[in-house]
Length: 163
Image (cartoon, rainbow, N blue to C red; front, side, top):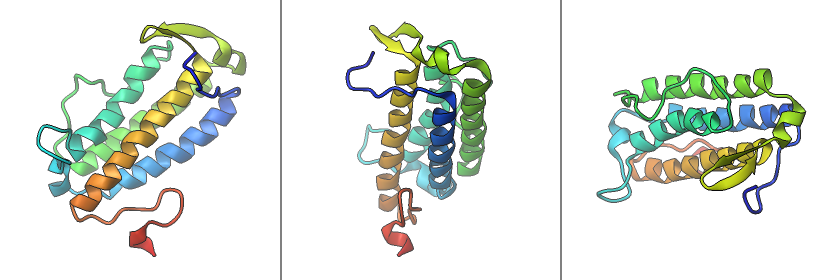
């Protein structure tokens, strides 16, 4: 398994955390504007729209490595032109992932292993890394949102904009 990655031991535990965290990501995505989508930290780096779309499509790409199957956009899908359309697609993809884990796996399935990225993973540890990926890119988005002059919603408590 991935070194140091904690393991989800129950489907219910993952579902509860995923529902909360994907809901927080959706709050961030809903704060984006169409004009903000082109904000990047520097030329040649992903812009805010690209990161938001990457979060939307990466869920299915990563989950597919574990054998989960559900309908959501892939990396090949064109990025929607509006912030609202990205947020809507993200909401459906996140719900799809959560529903797929609950309907397709049992608690014992989380201990099953598979190969990905030249490593052996348990499904439970891979879900943890998928969650970390989500949180990492959400943090990147909040920095770009500040640079774009947007109000940043609080995630783990109020943001400076909400105080």
